[in-house]
Length: 237
Image 1 (tube, rainbow, N blue to C red):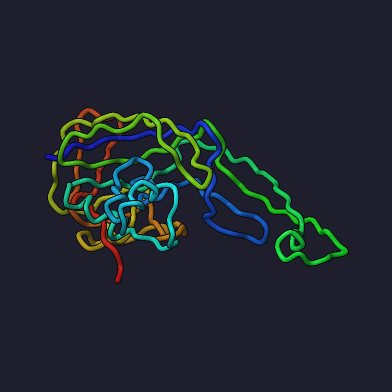
Image 2 (image 1 turned 120 degrees about the vertical axis):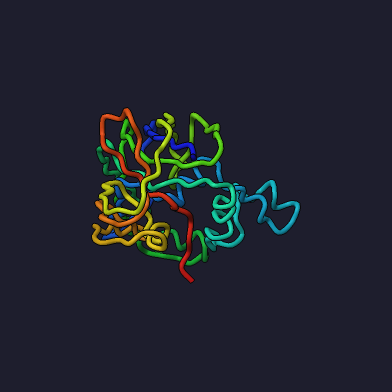
């Protein structure tokens, strides 16, 4: 049986990434995508995909091409038997920051301008001390870092990991999973009956999922947790 971990992330900085852009407002949804978590937890060996020796040391700090490589980076985790679910907010609050900038064309193009018109934008971020919860499934014991970095500002967060009791695998039945899931990772092995959609790039997530399929249960928990089995990273062509 695999090892199943319940993980709590507590923010020590405000967390920002643009889930949606509404005019001048850049909003951060209180949810963490499982792709982002894999990178933050250090599970992705992105250096392996650098094309030159010099890039191997710089890849983490500079990327010459802004092209996602999720399939290349995450497929090796399937071979290692590691899967991370998206994270939901256990508790959270938001902060609204306003930033301003001026018309600096004369600095770039050496053009004379009679006006210096200021502009502004607002970023809705997740406040420090907010907590997120997710699950990790691994075939072998894992040692995870205590501190991770998340979001555009590389915000600091503390990781608290607790291994759950040995899971029991149940045959295919109908069950409800209230936590967020990546639909690409579950729909190939489970029959999804109903769900709520969370619009978030790069792949929209689902939650409150009613499905038919195999799942894990755990004895001794205060809640009746039914975690979908056979989850793995899959990608649409």
